[in-house]
Image 1 (cartoon, protein in one colour):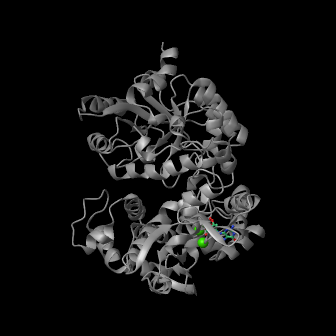
Image 2 (cartoon, rainbow, N blue to C red):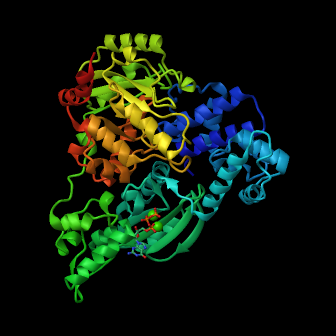
Image 3 (cartoon, rainbow, N blue to C red):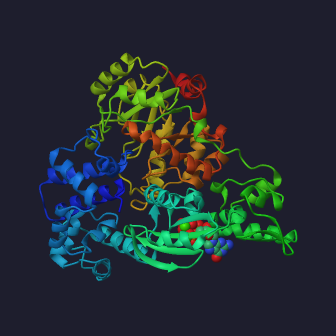
Length: 577
Ligand code: DGT
Ligand code: CA
Ligand code: CA
């Protein structure tokens, strides 16, 4: 059984949670949390490296003790410490942490005072009004907990795209190595690059389909076989994810891929379109009477109904079929169109690497420019920069002579509660790029949150709004803002919105990207890399941008350095003192 970085990360996170619920030393808790984050964001496959006897690179914050645990998990998939901690706590207690607002400390209180151990018990306690009297809780918290539990109990669980992608990749590799196998591809919402997926769908071509389904259900990570037939099978993995397999013959590949890519709504619209033309479209091909007229490739399927190829990211029945018919499908932005990154961190705040290492890594990706944008002082947990430390950092950036790449001096400055910025104008004036970001008071009313952001966008020195809704996928709801007003302000003031490509965020979402395009606001697809390995996050940002119909021209950082400077410099020059 193979162990993925996401598994190691989850084990460390659970250890941290259980230690904290158990009132352990906060430094120890923090060490595990940090390790979870570092491993979770690492591109290198740790278990594979351990397996091949390679020495791991020095990882920030991972000393001898944690390194030992890392090897233990990589080798065995388990950690003895976690097993011990789990025995000491009720099995379901960490589920409660999924409720926004419930950290380990509050979970500890709920457990000790009310013996709450499960989601159902939590629901009852909140409904009966037993929570608000506890120390550290209140009426408002109780109400929020009640709402969150109810929404959770009623909603099927989805998995973040990037986490599911790790499991999918390993499964695909396992299937590929089988004899007699043709193509192995991912379909479903994963191919459409949805930010979360309900399950993984794999399509295989083979003339010996039952051999393939047999191999599929005998994968080492399978927990349960849900169904197993000659051409299809479904399983759940140990991590809880469901995986569906379909095996078809090569001649049906295109039609099957089209069908299993979905979305359901797109398929239904396509079938109706085929019917209008006297054709029948299904997962085996396109047929006129009983004669197959297309199906070997997806292009042939679309061509049979008179359409050009529609990229998977657009297949949501959100107007893509009409656009294809009318000849106005956008030429979607591609990752190779990206000329630079406008949001990155270094060791000066909460990044893991130096300015120089980040510059080299950006250059190695073929970028023309990289903006270094560490946090501002208000974000103390991230070692945010005050004016003095920022000045020293700017000196270091100015001294950097990495050839072939332009470093832009920037900051990710906090937007304070009233919409003012966390650093004085005299400091911000020295920068090439100012990214304004909300990192606190997520729960302001819609009117006040919107007002706060509008005020920041009014500021003459602000270039861009970072992660505009603050959502963390599956763990924190977006804050309540009037996005249309924000976009109109950005448009009027010549400002830009970020699409933050960090896998937890993917913020702007696809829908808001489309809205930005409609309002004529350029979107910058930024990695928000906190280390050299995280520039790769960009691929997921590009996926969302494509889902949001963005073409190359709609994306700010497809511009070359000179064009970019003209665009981000303009508002600054207009208002320079
Ligand atoms: P998910 O898994 O919830 O993230 O979303 P999908 O789109 O991957 O949905 P899934 O896994 O249930 O099915 C994969 C694709 O198979 C789906 O996008 C379209 C196709 N499909 C499945 N069932 C049906 C159906 O009953 N009707 C039609 N038209 N298509 C279907
Ligand atoms: Ca699926
Ligand atoms: Ca499925």
